[in-house]
Length: 220
Image (cartoon, rainbow, N blue to C red):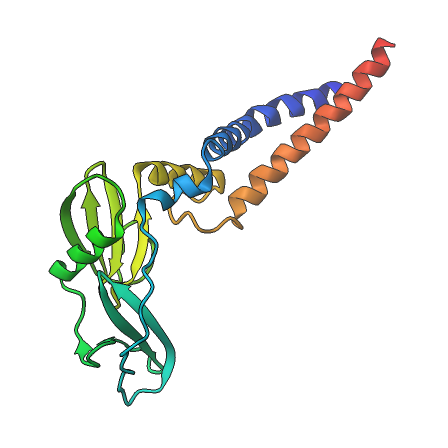
């Protein structure tokens, strides 16, 4: 019976070896740098404070659920979220309603936000229903690509900076997806693969402990 038990342990060990190795490699990679460097916080200028003097409140007939005051490349802007899920922008100095963020304005916001030395190379727009993988937020956006393949995302409706992604972040994100066994969406850490392979690895380790104890008794 113990020989059969040992065979099971060997075969289960071969199956469990791959996910265990994957968890160790991905975990070591993700621990190689502080999370602040992964998020490229040093490449993003902090938001500038807005002088409250002379601000004009936005005039809208929609019930407001959220009101935010932003500095967008030197211009104070109200972002109004309505109860009907609409989003509008208003110039905080003149009170005038602003339209969606166009490419020229997105360029100004990207240049004012990015603190690195690389030059802005291109701009690309994305619809809310097809966000790029390194954004994964259902928002219409502008992607500003800087030299070195750094992406800065700007909300096309509000002008807010949504994310800053570097090559290091994308490598981290890919390995995070493998670490939680969700390489597609990279969001669900509570999935059957994690439970199945994690449980299998635990059973294999417990079987090895039993075999080690039995062999030590026989050696004595």
